[in-house]
Image (cartoon, rainbow, N blue to C red):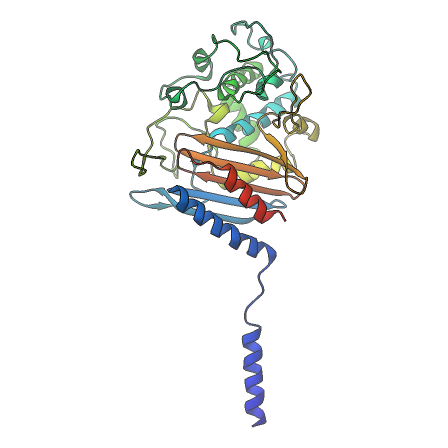
Length: 359
């Protein structure tokens, strides 16, 4: 009898301790995964990749849905390549910080120092104002410009807007502008005497080992690149029309994976290729001439979390792409979300993930 009781107690003990308690990160990931699946269903997203790192280490990286519908190919966050849309502006900003450190370019110099033949405006404006959306350069005026499928170089792309009037005197208004980053990327390549894409590859992608990041070249056969989708008038997912993003690579024309973007985000937390001083120039909110903060540095929105800690981020919306990259230096946290569907609002989902991973 004693042996039977002892055996029963041993069995009950084993049952009681067979379930290992979940770590705080495991619980967070479980909650985030539920949110991700709900988000995917709500917006009818074909494929999505989410990667999260903390203290430089990946704590969660997962693909949801498909990179293409037929034949079905699952999303894999370490290899599936998406359009990152306006997160490209953040990459351009880091390249600009590198140029300032190498004394190739000066942020407070006139853009005409580097592009003397650019049409004269009633007002001068600086490289810093251009990168901070304070120069008065307009954004897309219609969907035809947004989804332009015409092969243009960066310099040729200036023809779309260079003769248009400024929206406001530089420094007086914040006007978000991808065309402003087209102009900025031409300023940069003229100053460096190196093609913009080459400079970014050599100074950003290569040293950070972002091996799956590159310019979106129209019609190029790139292994593991997702197909790109939009919603039809009947709300069905259909292939998006072809687009040429080469001329606006600095504002929205790079490709990457969510895991590559973690490497980029961690460079913003612990810089290795630029100094803290150079980095601070792009992650410090600029101000209007009135002194009011814009909430945007150069290529990064600059805000705070509910805990009052720093938050640097950028959303992206392009043909067949809706994206967000979030960087939290104090918490040493980076979150990257890439999708292959046009027109999905990413801000709220980013806030939800922030609430999960930052207590």
